[in-house]
Amino acid sequence: MSKSDIVSEWFHQYSHDVYDFLVYYTGNRDVEDLVQEVFIKAIKGLKTFKQQSSPKTWLFSIARNVAIDDARKRNRKKLVLTSELDDMLKVDQDQMPENLIDLNEKRKELYIAIHSLKPNYRDAVVLRGLKELSVAETAAVLDWKEEKVRTTYYRALKALRKKRGGVEDE
Amino acid sequence: MSNHDDFEQLERELRQFPKNELREKDFQEIHQNVVEFANQYEKLEGKNRWMKRIVGGIGSIAAVLIFTFITISLVSEDGQTAKEHGQNETRMDKSGEKQNNEDQTIEPSMDPRIATIKETLSDFELPEKGRMNPEEAQEHIQGYTNADDLIVYENGFVINEKKKRVTSVIHFDGPNQSPVPKGTQALAFFKTLVGADLSEHAVLNGSVSIGEDIPEIDDDIRRYMEDYAKTYNSNHNAVGGWHDIESNMERDLSLIERVEKPLKNYKVLSDWLQEAKSHYLKAQELGIENWEAAYNEYRKATHMFNDLANALQSNHKMENPLIQYKVGRTDEITLESFVTTTAENLQPDSEYLSNQSKETAIFTLAHSTIRYINNFHEDVQRLGMTEDFDEWRQISEDIVRSGGKGEEFQELMKKFEAKVKDISASM
Image (cartoon, rainbow over all chains, first blue to last red; front, side, top):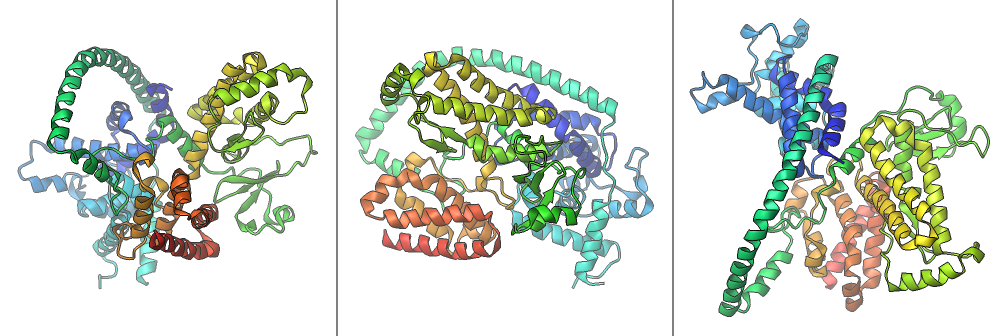
């Protein structure tokens, strides 16, 4: 079984999912190059792929890293403080570019709220909420313990609700 | 609106976000680029391997000399060093996750191909088309305790929706007309076969090996087969021998035939299946005249099915699968350390339990008990605790069979804990 056979099979099974994840993770629809990069990295790292991770969660974790690296590259010029790293993947309502994902007003508002969350909340909401990964899968992608996924996701939902003007936290 | 309702509403909204897909043109283009890169990368790796061998050949001579020098120095300075080091290597840590500096993981890294097939056989939707309506279905599944989980298809397949395994096949067109699975029914059917018929293998001595590799050819087998071959043509009704293996292969090939066509859509799985099939066909072609080569081909096919069956066995819908519980290589674990670690993991304040639910922990520990307990057979006998360990294994098997759910599982959990505690205290 050659590398190309394996990756070809994975591409057929997961490329749309990886693309969808990258779109929501970056807020940009033009992420085809990133999809390609994900699979190239998968080929290079195939030896390190073990049973601990399913191909899907492994590809998602690569995709997340690729998206973060890409954001770093794009923001390198304006990067002054390390703390700005956290803000790189935020989507600003005032700077919604044309190629940003096409959503109706209500969803756009929710989506912007998601991207205004702190990074680990955002990770949990995109993976658990939008991509509907299980707790175990999310834990595998983020290299977290499952308990952390549950707690962070719960807190993220609370924060999201608050941002949307819902029930106040107790 | 309550907190709970509020969260549910929010989650519903999140799930309703549209799904984005690559445009067909982009899909094709990226796919082609990726495949081309994989081919080039593989060629490059091939060249590098040769380079490493050449360099490694020279380097290894130096390494052997240095290693010899260091070993002699260590032993002469402190005769106990090596022994102590060995003891450290056998110790498992409390979490059951990390062993020592070396990779002592007993769960071998899974062949990416098996991992892909496992994913394919786990992550699929059963066909909507062809399902009987509930009233009609009820006629066929009356009496099933899990009837609510079953889908009855018009072509006769009865599939457990949760487990995605075939529970029964109804022959609507007569006993000799086996229904052909359609669409993803084939995945459910194949997955079921791998866990049943396709991992039960005839052995030359007339027994059946279930999920375990059949023995390699040794002097006993050779002697047996030499005698057997002399009378091959006149002992068609004999038990064991090549006849059993021929029948086994015929059965497996006919089962493969039923699924291979619908599985063609899943390239990795289909290629894997064709490879397994080719070993059977080769074995048939070689036949009794070349029984050693034929037996080895048969062995390769059965090994492939065992591999897949083992991979699928840990594929329960538990959120924390077996693979997260790692123990050191069996030849480096003692019976005592295995029991102690299991007992420690079950302590209420253990790190192991703090990482997961008790249900998941016990389900996982039961899995590893089945997997490793037989390695300590002689030690158990020496301790005179065969009965205790048999009971422990039986409870573990029942836990795995329960799928980690239901009232029975809750009872078994208590038994498991009690038995581990009991054994640990007696050692």
